[in-house]
Length: 158
Image (cartoon, rainbow, N blue to C red):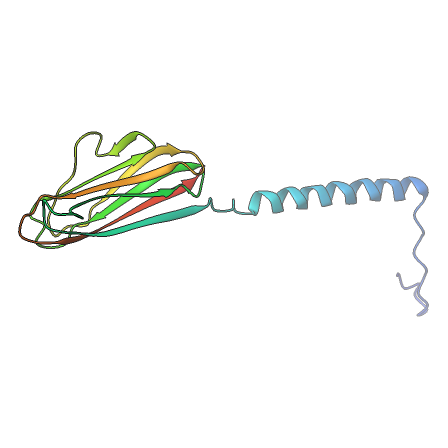
């Protein structure tokens, strides 16, 4: 409101229909820009990630329980991103591990891995389907000791 010089306030002019229409268009455009900015500023939600854990104590080589096949179904359609295998001290390269999805071996590509006192993390980008079997095959070739092996498979939705 403007002052008319004698202390009285003048009443603002009421916009015409054309002015109201223009204001509505400007307001709609401004709201559209705000919505666009909010959409661009919002982070992409993280993809689902699940871990399958396998653990087994293997008996002395040549006895019942010296080999094992452990299986779980993939909780996601996506990609196996990591496999971590933990061999405790004393395995001395005599405890074999291989990981499969359905019939496809991918860790390692063929044969087995066998280490000692080590927990490496292997990176992959191996596609798996929802409810596809993820299988870990273990065998103890040590004729003197039992060993507990753990394997963690990380699957990311995609």
